[in-house]
Amino acid sequence: MLSAFARAFRTPDLRRKLLFTIAIMAIFRVGSFLPTPGVSYPNVQTCIAETAGNNDLLGLVNLFSGGALLQLSVFALGIMPYITASIIIQLLRVVIPRFEALHQEGQSGTAKLTQYTRYLTIALAILQSTTIITVARSGGLFQGCTVDVIPNPSVVTTLLMILTMTAGTGLIMWLGELISERGVGNGMSLLIFTSIAASFPTALWSIAGGDNGLTKFVIVLAVTVLVVALVVFVEQSQRRIPVQYAKRMVGRKMYGGSSTYIPIKINMAGVIPVIFASSLLAVPGLIAQFGDQTAGWVQWVSVNLVDPAAPLHLAIYVFLIIFFCYFYTAITFNPDEVADNMKKYGGFIPGIRAGRPTAEYLGYVISRITSAGSIYLALVALIPTIAFILMDISTNIPFGGTSILIVVGVGLETVKQIESQLQQRHYEGFLR
Image (tube, rainbow, N blue to C red; front, side):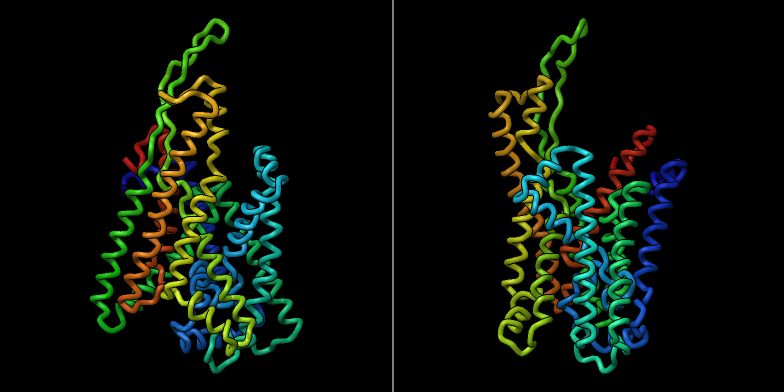
């Protein structure tokens, strides 16, 4: 593994991409600690110390921002507005024919959808920054804190904070796109990876420092290693559907006659369903912040939807993961399109007629595999969470199922991209 990394850094082009990616990730982390104008940084640190462990409502959002949310920094919103915008645009593809037509146009249509996602991200950033600032001014961000995190809550200061956080979101979106274009891996996924991984040392220290800290520390590491091994095993697994191409004459040359296969991963949706489900589950809690905290519906939301250990929260979480697993797989893999392409080039699945029967067979296989993949995602997301609940450990620490899936999934995809670039230069890959 180390020798493979050494060969990667000895390749000039790949070395530039890796260093560029690392530099962008470092800039992202620096922005997570720059305080927004109008925020008292010493008071924020005081409130974080006084209310440690009492921020379960925004814990997941804070985790995805790498701790920037509770710091009220320039990058306080993190990548969440972009994730939410992506969810909305993909859902609209199902109900708006124009969006589906743009998706089928190819690169030009995808570019327009990306532009719509950017506009929606900025709009959501304005809305979410306004929400966070309002909650912070009312004391809801740090309930029980004795100092004000925004000493001067004037209109000018509030507008400046909204503008700064929105601009920070736009900058994060641009940094992610820079990584995708000039670096290695998917930029947005790597920024989420960076945010979660940055919380590992603090979480380890908090576990080891409590009662029975060493015992809990060992159990957490054991559960984490087992889940990581399971994730790696399943993510590398695939169903291979054999495809035979008939021989055909083109001019005076004979083409075809080869055998290949269609690789279908057990988890075709990756970590997207987990991210989408986590994002949607955070919405009820944010809405409840604007209501009367003594109202019945607010208390019901806090007990049943906000609390990660609540049975209803866990049930909805599993349902959303399974739903988004099917949904994302359906919009990324079109059996009819694959069957038409195979028929166009003379390909067929042995024992299956070309055309409609092939599409139906592919749909049947995808449905069966997606059912197994969705159950796997739900189990991996729940097993660490339930284990940590039984050990009385915060479920928002970076070793929860959601975090492990994201970190391992993004890490595997990035390593595969590096491996493919090494193989293009006839080097031995990482995953050999």
